[in-house]
Picture 1: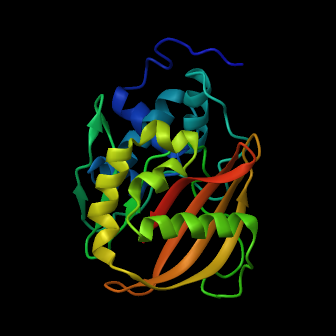
Picture 2: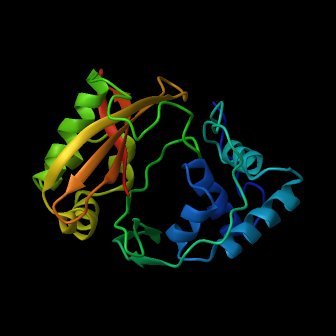
Length: 249
């Protein structure tokens, strides 16, 4: 096992390290900007500075090196596509979530479009892998994983916050308390209203140790917002598939 190194990469500022850690968790420059309430330009500047200081050509590699130096497992792949600079994005309003030890529990709301992003300690791919056309309702068929995702979403639909939190994986619960999850859901999920329809679109596998992740996508219409995409990430834990991430947008 890799041992943590004190003050790994001291040439990097705390803000540059913060940005690289978010890349490992599956963010790109745009979502990092939303997460930190910064402009995309500022995020790109941080990534460029980190790459220069670490003498690497990609933000992905910089994030990998930092992760390794801090004693965390390094994923075999961050997924296809380049992580790093991104064009400027529209302004984003961010709802402040509960804080613990200075860390923000994230609930971002893009202007005019409700979006829920909950922090998870996963080495997710920064860009979704190629797969079936997500607009097609026959892109995936029901499996154990998709049914687990659907049952969990139904708990959220019923506003059973504690039950849905208990049904998540260890990595999710480590970063999100019941109260943080409940507060985030009330601000983002409740305003969408009741589910009108939910159609399974795709199921994709993300290669990551030890058993990989499953990403299940649904096309969902709510009473107050039609044609939304629900993305649920599951990890196998204790012989069952448990939710470790959710995105609605």
